[in-house]
Image 1 (cartoon, rainbow, N blue to C red):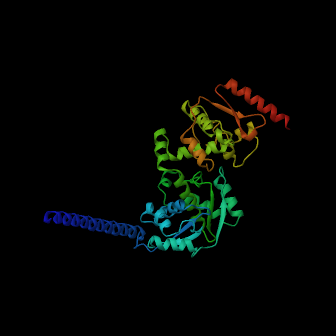
Image 2 (image 1 turned 90 degrees about the vertical axis):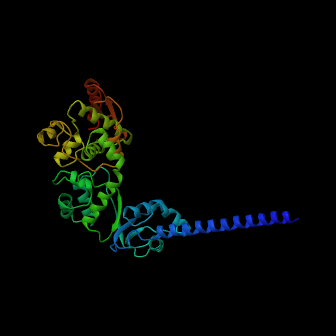
Image 3 (image 1 turned 120 degrees about the horizontal axis):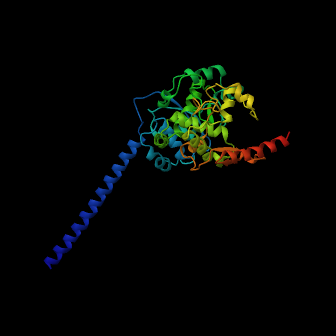
Length: 360
């Protein structure tokens, strides 16, 4: 009997010990999680009381909002942002708009501001289409009363902007040509020309990722050269699916040191867009550095702002042996006939010009 009671007593003590251990372990987990959560909610930099203007575009998901806040250095632990928004029932409640936020704010404070729309400033929206030059951007923004045209262009040439790639760009009026990313932007009504340019450069910096920089190096080209090639693709291509093929023609010609002979570069040299480029137009700017009919290799820089698809095509061209292309008769969607030989190209060119003459 005594031995049996001892066994029962031992089992009870074991059960109690295990129970106590589990409670202690659970308490440690809870305490640890709370500590981790509190650390995640803490300000990204409590000592930095400066403010930054942050735009949350309409329709932004919680994930996208977290990425935007992270890009401005406003989150201590970006990976926890999604979890915190769910735990606090903020998911789906964060409002679009322009905010002034500080790294000294905790994540909870930022979420409260975004969910209530506190401090939203009046904003305006503008769109820069793909393929625009700096001059066309300035004209468009000035016509909408968003910038002073001369001030905008002066800053594109001489403004100081905190992006590493700026140091790689040649000086001059076309310094930022191709680097103000074409997109739809929402800015404060009081946004200055400098702030607008900064936003557009920041968007380019997000699009041209580290992977893209590595790919450019792998191809043996600088970022500036890749953006130049992308701008040629953008200006020469209207049918989206053709971008990688147009890229292949450009690279194939460069590989054999064949002049690019691109109409878009001559139009850039002329300073105006023409529906039909004539021989006398090409000769009018014969010695211009952007005249790729007479000057071999790439032009000195981009001729317009390429979109994401053209940048991707410049980095990942199609694998072809095409050297020529010309618009198809009817030019449905801007599609081209591609060819490998001059004889084949001339036949396609005659077909197109015969059709063109019939339209007159």
